[in-house]
Image 1 (cartoon, rainbow, N blue to C red):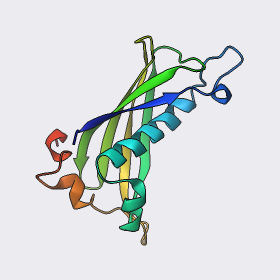
Image 2 (tube, rainbow, N blue to C red):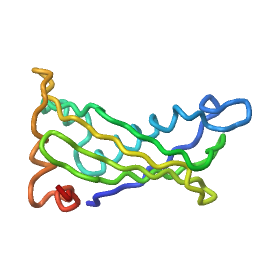
Image 3 (cartoon, rainbow, N blue to C red):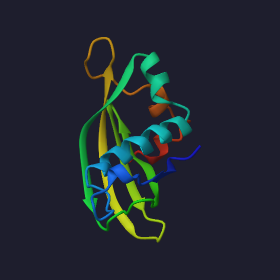
Length: 140
């Protein structure tokens, strides 16, 4: 398993303005899709986490826009773990166009929440155990 993963997303027509440029609001949605696929690749899909009583809620998000994405572009979105500590998971994203242009970079902080109580809880052991591929990337 890898601490990072790459997901591809095609820019759909409804995500663009009249000039065929992807609307800035879509980038955060793409992060969500890439994060969901990354967790699935890591062996912990959202559905399984929720069945175990865990929710991962976005508490912070940031995006830096570098170059526009256009209708029908097949974008590569790299998701990588920045840290996993306590009740927080921090991820970074890099979105690249098919022409090699850096479209945007961003980060999300996810709060681990107990599904029943609605309160913060420690990340599941999977994210913190010594043999987890995630732990090795956590600088904290």
